[in-house]
Length: 357
Image (cartoon, rainbow, N blue to C red; front, side):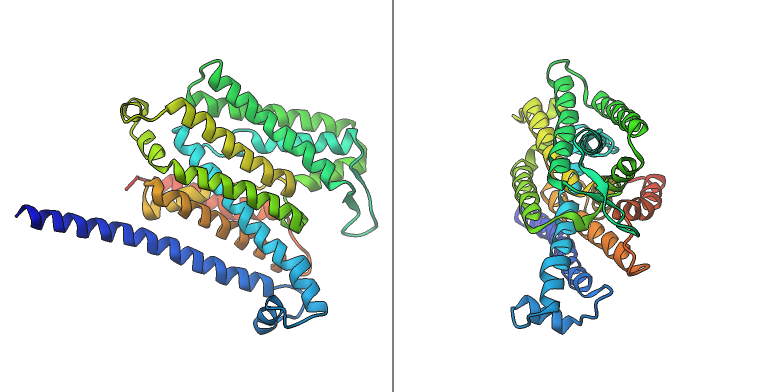
């Protein structure tokens, strides 16, 4: 009898894990198919066969330039950024025990925007380029990127200082993040008030969010930071599961709660800073990806972390594809698309509520 019960338990557990793995695998497959479509879609007349031949090195010329220099970096950049923002939001929501925690609500994105505004105004990184749609140019993108990264990490260090030195609770950390976001936004507005028309346009242009900015070198850095952070989060997946049961329970299980919280916050913010500093502000992904996957596969971080990562990549890639194709050849800002598509969905999720399975 005991053996029969154990066999049923084992079978039930395998069914439990198999379903979650199947969902993650399906998401990966959908992301690959969407990536192929995204490379093929656009004003240039390409076919799936031509895309495949070009990727295999069998075709040269214009198609090779379009695919390898423009579309493939954009597709990979969108997926990588989506993975980073979503997994950062997933971990922040766990260690702060707040479903509204995300890179955007903690002020990291606003800090990056302030850093970019400083570079454009004080360091002369914005200028006129030509007439028409491309009249505003960020003429020194690396200077803007470095300045944005410093702004994002400044917000992160303030949050970590409040947590480590002042002993601020996880709930209060989210409130502190909202306050920091408001502070950085106000400082950015003040900078815009004293800026010229061109500089204001360059600041606003940067905050739109643009996947097409990333080069292969930028993509390599984003992928390295995101990949390393994802490996760290997966290595601590059991610790995050323990934190779901409360701090006291986690400490009783041997989890170093403060160390896990501070390290997780730093790495999640580092990923966010790397993404935002290259691509601008992209909202919603860090909130929607984890919540969508919680409703589908539950709160087990062994599966939630990779599922949220893939869902974030899929969402941002889908949003960027819509931004490029909905009124082609005009490319809409992807930050606006993610907010426009994501806000109603997130409100729907909040209205329905969610439960951990």
